[in-house]
Structures are given as C-alpha cells and as structure tokens.
Amino acid sequence: MVSRLPPLTALSAFDAAARHMSFAKAAEELNVTPAALSFQIKSLEEHLGTALFRRLNRQVELTDAGRALAPDAQAGFETLLRGWRAAQRTQDHQSLTVTAGPAFTAKWLAPRLFQFAQEHPEIELRFSATLRLVDFARDDVDVAIRFGTGPDPGVYSLPLADEWLTPVMLPDLAARYPEPSDLRDAVLIGDESMNFLDPSADWNDWFAALGLPPVKPTGPRFSQADHAVDAALAGIGVVLGRRALVIKELAEGRLVAPYGCALPSGGRFRFLCPEGAENRPQIAAFRDWILREIDKTAHIADAMTILKRAEQT
Image (cartoon, rainbow, N blue to C red; front, side, top):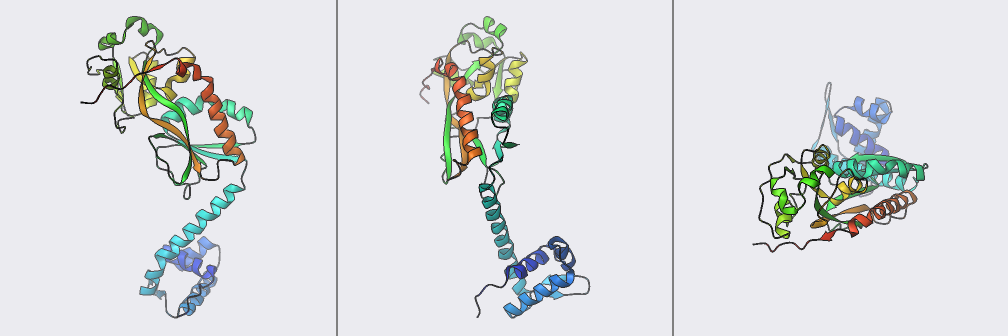
C-alpha cells in the first residue's frame, strides 16, 4: 500500500467537501469552480484507490473510506492553520492581543491604558475580557493575565504583586467604624469571585486572623469583584477589597483602608505568554509597563501589615 501523502490541494478539497457535504459549497469556500474541486477529489480517490464520496442526485455522502479520513483531515488542516497563525505572530511587532478577567480589566488595566498608549503609540492593543482558559496554540492571544495559584506548565509565567484583601470603604464610613470590631455593625459587601480558593479568603477569614468572632455579612453579594468594589464606591457598605482592584482608589483617596492590615489571599495574578515569546518587543514592552505601574503604588502595599491566617479547625 502506498503511504506517500497526496497533494495538499486535493486533501483540502476533500476536507471542505466533507465539512459542507456539498461540492458547490466547498468550491465556494475555496474560491474554485465546482469542476476544479471535483477534479481534485477524483485525483485523491485515484491516489487512494477507492471512492471517498457517493455521488447522489442532489447531494453526496461519505463512503467508509471518506468517514475514516474526514476527522483527521479536518484536524490536520486546523493544526496547520494554528501553526501558520503562530508563525505570523512572530513577525508581527505592532499588534498585541491581551486577555484578562473582567474585574482586572475594569479596575486595573482600563484606567491605566492611556498611559501605555502614550508611551507606545506604535503598538495596536486588542483586549478580550474573559476568564476562559487560554490555549496559546489555538487562540489569537499574545498575553494572558490570570489570577489563581498556578502552576502554569508549558508557558512563560511571571508572578505579579502579592494579592491580599483588606476592608475598604468611603472616607466618611471610616469615621463610623474606627476599629475592626466595629464592622460588626456595618453593611459588609460580599465578593464571591474568590470562592474557588482553598483555603478561603472571605470576611470570616479576615475576622479570624484578627482573633475576632465570625460575622454574618448582611450586605449584597457579587460574583464579580469589580461590581463589589463599585458598591463600596457608591457608599453601600464595606468591601473586603482585593489589592489589585482597589489600589488605585486607595492611592487617589476615593476609598480608604483604615485598619492597615490585610489577609493574604493565597493566589496572585500572573503574566502569561507562550514560552520564548516573552522577549518579543511588544510583549516585553507591555510586561515592563505593568511592572512599572505596580511599582507606582508599592508604597501602599508596603505599609500594609499582612496578617497570619488563623489555624483552621
């Protein structure tokens, strides 16, 4: 049996016809005439020594051989396309596609992007605010910023600043609750975005780290961390704010963290990209800019006392 592969043009014609189950639609996709496509498929069948399609009156259907070939033909062309796109990206030094979670995008990235654009007008930025897992080999993404505990095998992974949580509120509320124990009488906003962490990082973990009894939060609960922060900015109550998502508001005085102590989250944001791509000019520029922006508010983080977690019982 001949094992040499047939021409890729013939395989491409078969793949398109098998996906559409129509020679006409396949020809339209490949921008060839139906006669040219039919010729390619016929040459492929001759190469194989058996028919791949049954030609019916107004339709076609795959033979046993066609059904055996179709899945791997489609997968093969998808793999080639991914590889081609990856090769194209290595030559592209003017565009950068970044994905980050909605909360990080809204509270950290978006308010600062004007500065990056001013520093790097030659880079065209594209953003996708999603928490979906990223496959750099499949997705048209250069950089992903993700929160969690890792590890991140097979990719370049740069841990960013340590992530902690501390009660934050409007300045006038801070006067009402001068001590952490006073928060028992406050509206405590719930942020459920980190419920996946083990150990947990919620209000009762923070109270426990201070040796205070647990409190049942009575305020609204949000699945998105940026919505919880927005509720605190609206004066609804006090939120256990995540460092990255409240540090700008703390630096600019819109929110305050009156107690000066924080609970370690156990997770952190990481800067991810394909291995070997971290030194591409636009990726390196974006990474270095993020690190400089983190340094601008490092004095706030450095002034925070990190609590020791209470022993779990």
